[in-house]
Image (cartoon, rainbow, N blue to C red; front, side):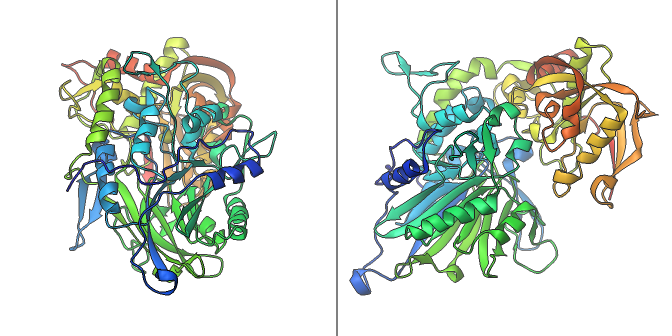
Length: 610
């Protein structure tokens, strides 16, 4: 299998898309100005020398999160169902292998388009995150990505930084990271594919901040792409990151632009939506449409898919980091393909859309799709290896510095339970930092989505087994949140714990990781707020006093009421501490050594009833 980089496909876009104040008329003009990726025609035949139908290959992925290097531990594995019904873990991911997989998949497919469903950047490992994700944008350009929607993490550094990712230019604070051959600062060129954000508008102008749709067009074969992120983005990102923006209903937005595309003669439409579902099986290759036990999908995407107009022929989804290829009926009752390719570049989805030249629409009964593993057994793409080495050289002095020691793997992602050992460790680290600022600090709470990886005992480089490097710690906590202290009453803490599993979080609970001393029971046999057993909540063995005031440590995101936990945003007497990564590294340095490494916490602070 050759890993030689292929030449750029004809007609790659060089045009930069959109400024925040662009009007819809300007957006339409931009759409017309952007030529499509091109392939070769099918063999001649039928009227006009062309076959009536042509198969369009749609390659897609989602939630890459800057994972240029293969992700470590469970974050870098997918589960495969075997013929005998057993399950097998497979190491997967890394942009060197993703590039090879996509380039190999495109061979013998003259009509091929590659799309993504958001969160390509943000919450990234140090190799990309240290450089504000410029390395990932460069990698996506080399991958020949054609189009993507935005995700919530594209807003981590704000709308202006997202515009820079699209249009290029050096960072306003940190400047240019690379130099040209003459040693002069080299300007970051930005993405040569459009970011789509149909449901994100400027509060003042009411106009989309990015292009709402884009049309892939080759010799009369047209496929429109509409890109949206989840309407609930403001609940899960920093308030500063989405200041001045408004997020709209996904269904209404997609239906609006599907109608616009239809009037333009674009009958074949794909929605790229950064919202997803929860499959009944964790194996990437399970039969989602089988009526048997362990199959099917639930979660927000099911209702959204059922509400999106039949004009849309397929949905590429993301956000939940799950793997599925399912059909969900559209409003007319016709089956429609809905896909997601896990996360971190571990899978890609290959979908065949049969395009009818006469109707200009997709023959829905012919749509086929499957997820494929980005295997690390294949050859690496040399151009991606070169890109990684180039940025790794810049990052190495910071990334390779030891910050602590562990005695075994400490799972933080994919632990399979609401409480993770790494979540406990981070909460303990934040409480220790809080006590250094205010000895009266009582407890710490950590959001699970802020933990982006495991801590792995096996060495990732030359540092030796059990050594935690700055780069590895950064990969776990890449958001640069501050550790804040606030006063909350016992009653407010109870309310916040109940908000984890009710209201906006009822369908997909956000279970906070808790510091040592805070214990309670989570009864999953119940529903909504009743899942939190109120009289079981104790701090250092004593029941919470509803009227007492507690000093609580939590990151800036939670202190702003993030993750659908508005009660945490009502804290008083705020005190802003240091960066959460510094708090974590300081804790590792103070509590571990080569002779006495930290052991994984038992993760027994939350008692689960199933």
